[in-house]
Length: 523
Ligand code: 9PG
Image (cartoon, rainbow, N blue to C red; front, side, top):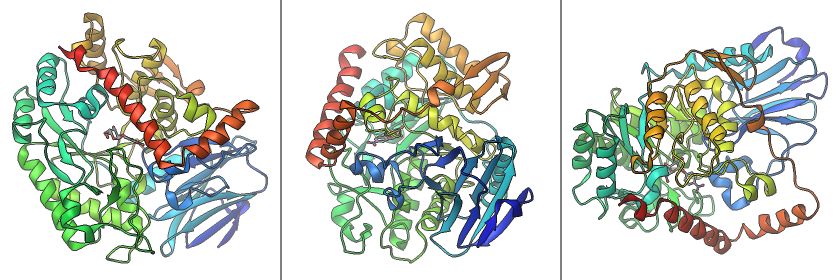
């Protein structure tokens, strides 16, 4: 289907497998919307398009691998362009399994499935995005929970070095801080796929949930239920549940964060679905009512599945079974999740990459122009650019920091994270009470209690009560490297594609993490 911008009165809906809108002039900027939580969402300059993301080994982790090598500006489900008159044209799908490209002076939407429904709207940025949001809400549904809980999450405090003993100590020290939920993150399980407590949790998960609930809070638990490690018992027992590609090779769901090869379960396999349903019921029986499901993109990756249905639809179907098994009364946060297919089926979505106690990561951001790796700045950029999702679902910007210990963020950067969380209306931290000074503890308590009035005054500018906050600097994308840095980038980008080198890099990162939380600090 071919349309001209002049055909678009204000708002139009079309049904097509492929739709092309001819633009009267080359737009100034393109709004690129990444596939899953950690993928970049940003307005990019059409005159200097972003290069193909490096290193390639990270593509399955950070992008929709099907489109990772596309050179034209592109994104998942929607794309928007900004013209010299400041007006914005949005092309947004109301169906899963769709992708948008900017090819010269054409905005093009494509569906991997059958005909998709598309919204084209032209006008003021906020109003065209609101029109899209309103239609998405009608088609996909919105969260029914009025507010999101204030969460203490274990990840950035303990990483996977969490133990029952340290957690109990932390819970006790959180004492009267106004958290509604305490969520145990990665590190409690036997293996990816074997969702039973490991030897660091000798009392078991029901006992941990009881401990949390005895403080009057909701117990939360992290799982990556769609992933499977080749080291797990699940893999040994059910190798046939794993998604393979057309040549019969396992689809790699990323590199081996947990020290093994990580694959993904076939979410269309009836036995996998029953296994997932059982798992969700077990977690509820243990006593967890706040559930963070992570690395969900695995369920929508390209591959051969039992049922031949479009990959994102397959994922949406299984998420709806998961939701049903958890029950509407559970609070479900999805993470590492393809955004559109999750709408209406969860209460909150992580809408950016991981934060970190570092503002930026020179190697990834400046040299490789990779904006999906953990850093405070990367998180802020993508979250600010995804705030249009707020009317549909609670938007999780990841955690905020308050303590100075083992944290390299400047006060100003910590404040930016905190302000963004106030704007999102989703508050969380992993700061260890063991590390807090009295003032830091008071600051955190004040933040958790605050309910300011939020107003938007520009693309990146907000008002929090009477205070103006501006994220314009944070969202800027690092310019492509020049001179020697360009050579360095080529070498590092190339070297990073070798598993051995990448694993070495990961091992070093782990040493740093372990040192940072060093159990010596915990007494
Ligand atoms: C637990 C964490 C936390 C965090 C999630 C997710 O290697 N990686 O590319 C990578 C990306 C994200 C990530 C971990 C590793 O973080 O966002 O909040 O739950 O998993 O493992």
